[in-house]
Length: 160
Image (cartoon, rainbow, N blue to C red; front, top):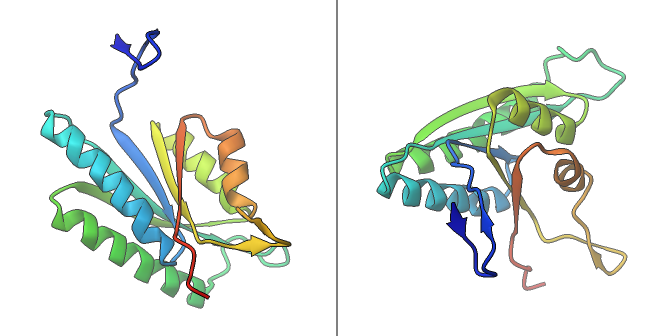
């Protein structure tokens, strides 16, 4: 049992698998840093943590789910190559994959369930819509439906 700062005891579920969805943006680096820092801290305590990186190609409903979307796959491969290189340089275990889906949020939740991930680390770019910070549709879906903890990190505001 771990004791939290409020004095209540709680069970800590050991994290053995972290799911990091990437989308080929600058914010991906933030998520990879956060996941890697956590995994390195656990590795220092003798625990191995696998970082599973996934890129979701959203296929429009008008197309078959197995339609080859070359540009999206190429972007995904670049995002995964970058994420994999950063993690491997730190000596961490990493698994990467590209999946086709109709909805990225649902695909991320499905992967988390199937792989028994204990943590999802997601990043978002700083976006404003009508004067408010906009998280898009994927992050709210994952926050609402994920079977595990979800950490969201936001990229810094641009200087514009």
